[in-house]
Image (cartoon, rainbow, N blue to C red; front, side, top):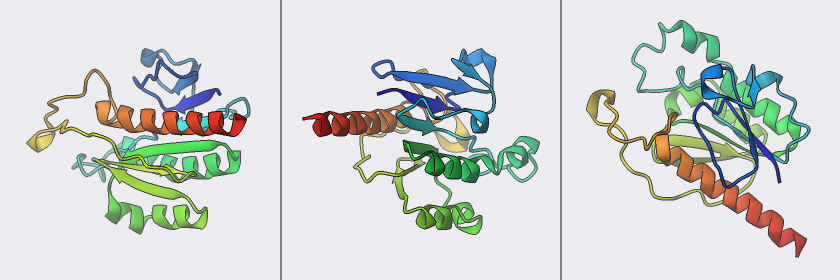
Length: 179
């Protein structure tokens, strides 16, 4: 199986065959450019982490941030793109029930019969039913001071652990179907 990780930033899962995409060259992506423009045809599965600046409660200036306003549509557009791709997928973002409800993220997920899981501080949207619960540790102190991210970004090792669990699940499912 080969996958693609959209908006990967620093995320890496070395034990899996994954192509990494990002808009920022400093993360040394395999594919540089807009995540919505990537052709998903060659891939068996997709991992996506659209920017959470609009959705994050940790960003007290979200309503004044030009970047948050510029990226507000990336989460719903990513959901639609991945559903239409008919690939296995998982999308990671923050937990913000109030904004998700108000801006229709939950309705969109229900419309497409997607599974929404909350693990730690993050929301995971996927098109397969699976158990994503795994050990999470505190990675922020009060007032947003980071205490641990194990060299990761975008949620640190907590997100990496959940994505790794999902990867092992889908790769195990494919192995079972081959038998």
